[in-house]
Length: 257
Image (cartoon, rainbow, N blue to C red; front, side):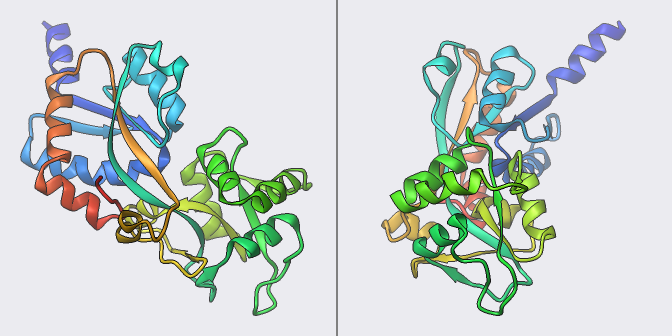
């Protein structure tokens, strides 16, 4: 009898994990979903990264993964499927206490290469990097050949701060004076981070500017599910795609393609 009740409890729990970029929004969506579906409790696990989330859903450790990259051939062999649910601006962020509000790609290249070592107010510039295998690093490299070259220089710099996941990066951006690094608008807004998403080359990193193509730098966000979706997963995804779910996405830095 005890085993039966434990199984019933597990069936009523929807566990979601994956990229840190999406977790804050998933918490908001989960709270709103549970308010309408009190028989299902949504649990958000700490950041697993996109690859970790895919493996976790394939193994059955979580019911639904969220990722910020498309699946590769190795992922597809695990028998999982993906569907895009939104896009959010990829941004360079600084502490909300900073007076900096804009940056250019040339300045980014100069910062990573060590040629620009002070902000306009004279305070030192510091950087936060992500692991070489991270999607943020891939996006950085794609911004310009100069940034790609400068990033290679920065990665060899002794003592440079490397943040393992999106939440660690946001913590470091808030904690370290004068620091700049990559993040996403969705994370900043959904987690109410004390960070400023900088204008890049004079363009605001907004969902509207993603939609129009004015701001071309963004992360694609996906749901990844196993071969068979549970009823709870189906209901949650349907809620995210409903007007109520779409409003939560739109209010927290997402464009819905």
